[in-house]
Length: 403
Image (cartoon, helix red, strand yellow):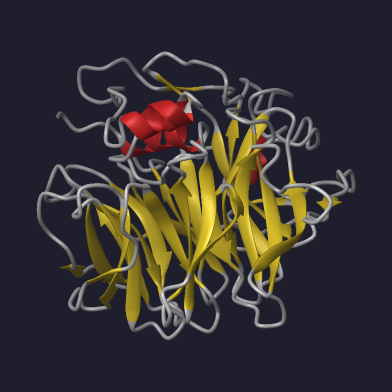
């Protein structure tokens, strides 16, 4: 299959049934149909990226000639920041964007950073039409290939001690969760069975993993935990992109979930685990005109980074990009800040120990790993208008009812 730009595919994938942050995984996530996903777990959407001989890419909701952001389709994701001068935001330099990876062919995806902030792991098709996993210093250029072969490997996640990487792979026939040492050796399969399992995330003590799995009975994306010592598995709710808070003060997981079953309108949620059961299920961030996806905790567990996908129901022609940006918010949903500047497609943020946020973007032309400061000046900061978070007690309402 010809190479297809990761950013465009993943943007589409993120806004459907939650999307895998893997370009090679099922693109039916964009249609919002869980049944389609289950029956076709490894298909892709044949969209084409702009390039030589192609129509020039147009940014959906791009800036007006006077530099003022339109009320719709640009920075006005949460009904605020109307009239912000985008040229001023871009010229401020506060975000301090840095590019970390480069590709001559293919694309990079699924970036994660180790606990020290010195190494990043990511998936890429730079050497293969299938995604393999790679390791690189955040301040270096030398790349070490960790996996190879005809299977797809994706969603790397460093253990809290930095010695292991959990990841998703099709090497067993369908998407399952595996562990390996940080040098790519000693691979162990963690999940088995017919359910597609993706996007692992570690508990702070390193004894458990959370992941998303497509339920064979429910037909929905479910959140599961597994005890790595006993292999006990528990289903804790419905959703995608789980990310375990590094804070040891509370056993908390952030995730995305559609506001209605089958919907592309995702919002960001958190839940607390008490005796292994989900409680205090809380909707933290929602938008009336964007999908809120792929949360990532700050190292202190006090803030979340996430991506927004504008107008997820809108079907765009191949030469038009959707609008996606990276944001930061406090854990209670207040004090939003926009980190990226509207250039390119910016997705799947991961917070590093030095408070920089790593993400995948095509802002330089190819889909590569970039980073930006996790805090920027007031030009990006949302105003005081904030929707209150709505808490739903798990024993009062099924946390998966909306899915």
